[in-house]
Length: 188
Image 1: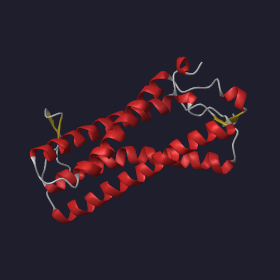
Image 2: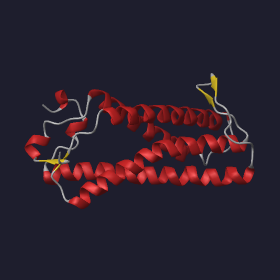
Image 3: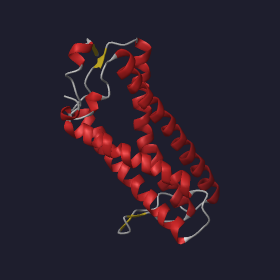
């Protein structure tokens, strides 16, 4: 089966309700985690900063779990076919999605590794202590901090590209890429 369909047929093909729910939950949490990360990093040490770090870690663990659920769902429920578009656009969309999935896992894991290397245990929701993945090591912590930071910047850039491409196709090609990720009652 081809991975492109005419625009008229494409309008009827939407993601499943579960895929939509996971997409939008992750989107909200990723926006919150990115904003919180950029805000808290320059704060002076205080109880507020430590609280924000805890919340940031909790979001990261939750995003990791939702990404795992989303990947499993996607493996059993493939995405609807893309509408007709240039080969380079289809390849760019696939590469962007693949890279975003890699970062959905790499960013939380690098943050967890960073905390472990700093000797600070991650305690999910203040209740569930997660095991340290490495022993404390300042040099490793410095490297993992950079990996976490630049992976976050990379994800932010891909999100801008993802949103921009969806809006572009919606407005110029009228291919309704945004609508296929929204419940039909919102746009019927």
